[in-house]
Length: 109
Length: 244
Figure (cartoon, rainbow over the protein chains, first blue to last red):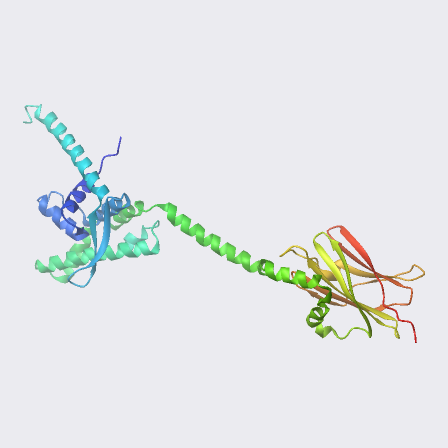
């Protein structure tokens, strides 16, 4: 059985599926879209990105920012896209299972 | 940033530099955003550092993403290169097989005496009566070749010139000054032993000259070569000329 993905990895892959982003942009986007639920310590994003890169799920390149500074952008690879599909299905099945258990207890409903 | 870098023991110098650049870029973005939000630069910098989180934790997690395999392979490569360079330096004379082959051809050429004379030119002239010879003997891979015998009839002195080389390219030869000894054997059977007076001992070729060897008509010279318990000997005829 394949090891399931860390939820931060899943969120990062989801964001990158829409557009290529650099680290800081991923953090701010994550905060915005999760309504600050996923306000992680910003530095912890980079081990996640490097892990995804090592697995071949993302690739990176440098592009000049409007300020003239070079920024490292990440984009999804074909492998990353397939992984995202698999992990999304796995996550939905998991959350559906949790929801089903929670709903089965009337006191919690 | 330095604290993060400290944890990146598995990363190469370039990888550490790239991470540093990326994290610094992130913090600059955060500082700019905070300043735009009305924060002073100093406060913005403090908050940006705080927002990054624990540097040791980030560094440790980043370090885990680097495989030690390539790092150690690279270090091993450097170590092997250094060892090979040291070895090549130590064995430099033996790493020239073509030179050794050339030497071997020169030694084997009976007309090579001129070449030998150029090499040993500061040893002085041979005695007046000279004869180029080509007497060779082999002990193991070493070949000892006597290429000239000369005589000073008036003073009753003989001179022998020889060279020593290995049959195998790059092979080591013995020290000619110790391995090759000249014996005289007089008619009455009494004799003396002489070590060469002049020696050139390069790693692949050696030259030796025995001079001032007392010689009388009828006397026999014998050259012996010994190395690693093996020995060989050869008789050297002297070019006596009949008095006019």
